[in-house]
Amino acid sequence: MGYLLTLDLGTTSVKACVFNENFDLLGYSSEEYELLTSEGNIVELTPETYWQAAISGIRKATELSGITGMDTGIITITTQGETLLPVDSSGAPLRNAINWLDARAEEEAAYINNRFTNEEVYGNTGLPEIGPACPVCKVLWIKNKEPEIYGKTFKFMLLEDFIILRLTGKYVTEKCLMSSTGYFDINKEVLWMEMLSYAGIEPEKFPQIMDCGTIVGGLLPEVADELGINPGIRVSTGAMDQAASAIGAGNVTEGIITETTGTALVMAATIKMPDYSNPARLNIMKHGLKGKYIMLPYNSTAGIVLKWFKDEFCRYETEKYAEEGKSVYLYLDELAESSPPLANGLILLPHFAGMLTPEINPAVKGVFFGVGLDTRKPHFIRAILEGIAFMLKQNVELLEQMGIEVKEIRSLGGGSKSRLWCQLKADVNNRVIHTMEQEETTSLGAAILGSLAAGIYRTVEEACRVVKVKKSFKPDEKTVSVYAKGYVSYKQLYTSLKKMF
Image 1 (cartoon, rainbow, N blue to C red):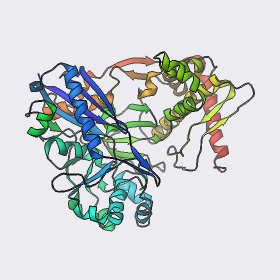
Image 2 (tube, one colour; image 1 turned 45 degrees about the vertical axis):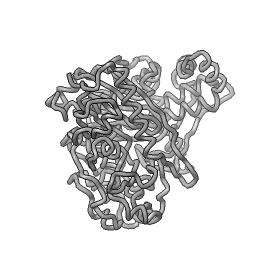
Image 3 (cartoon, rainbow, N blue to C red; image 1 turned 60 degrees about the vertical axis):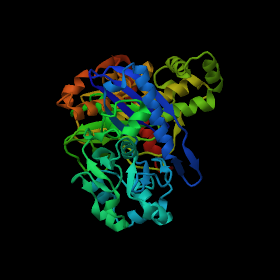
Image 4 (tube, one colour; image 1 turned 90 degrees about the horizontal axis):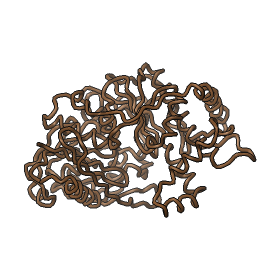
């Protein structure tokens, strides 16, 4: 039997998983790392840190799986987008990786935006705008601020590309991951030459562009020795983590929407053809599936608001539950459940770092509205959960206004582990909310892509038969009408405060 090994390189950790051909999870490992930050919006990490975490994760996952090295069949990688690092002609990194969160390239972003309108950018790349965190700005920053490194650069690699390079020695990238770079035309599936020409960046400095779920080559013998696995194992391209997660949740046809409530709220809708006409300018990228696109409504503060409240106002509870080996979030759920719907009149506007959808407004801040002397901690916690649910509803309505059918919503991320939060989302949206049996949907999505590359399955629909719903939360008729009124107040709150922001 062939086995499917996956690597999911996230912002602060890498997850390694081993699946069999039936997508049963046999081995799992998570290796954490700490980003290097400094003034000026600089966020970096040494390339070797990523690599060693990947190596350690593979070793632990394969050991826990109990399989022998000869059995493992294919490795597929999924990563965060926008993290960039230059390598020389021998594949050696020339500097630290510039993380996706890094926003130092403000001058470069201004230079690009002086030439290209947001409409031009959106119509070619699917990006609502070019910001300083965009890879094209990072490349231009290196060209302007570190010309010696730029001159030595053979290829500018994204994180998935770099790991594939270390595994195989091949300089390749894939279309889904390239979608957020600012120098990739998602319609023609080629480098956007007009952008590169204006920035003075040579197109030869980028790797070969491949489809997602495509065999790149075999594992280098020295890497196989280091990992203790079969040197005949093959490596395939994956997809950016959001697309991989959508695939792992069965979001491969129109009508199924996934929402991930983690640090941010990220939604994903599978579409056949992109629509660039809507003024909301939602992120559009190539799907991990050939011939399809994925639309990504996104707001940068969701679960992080609950974490902020926990860290600032629930320190005693956090320490107490940590000593008992329990999650404080279970306790927060209990507190929120003791509050009535609409949190005793308290409403949260959850945009703590600006609004991206349903409209782009970076000036917006978070607001708790309706605080009284009778407002208690349970009300604040419930208002946070409800505020995120209202934000989800706004994005669902936005998708429907764009003609995108929403038949069902599948909930992913840390927020999906909260029974109360899932129920609130169901009540607010008046729709069934499904959680998934396999919580590691990003890794599962990578495994599905690997299985297609290896020929284990012929179609993604065939492979996705393994995707199972764990639990379904049906709307409670008693609270649906209550939340319908609360949603009106939630929208009015933003409208009333918009000019003040």
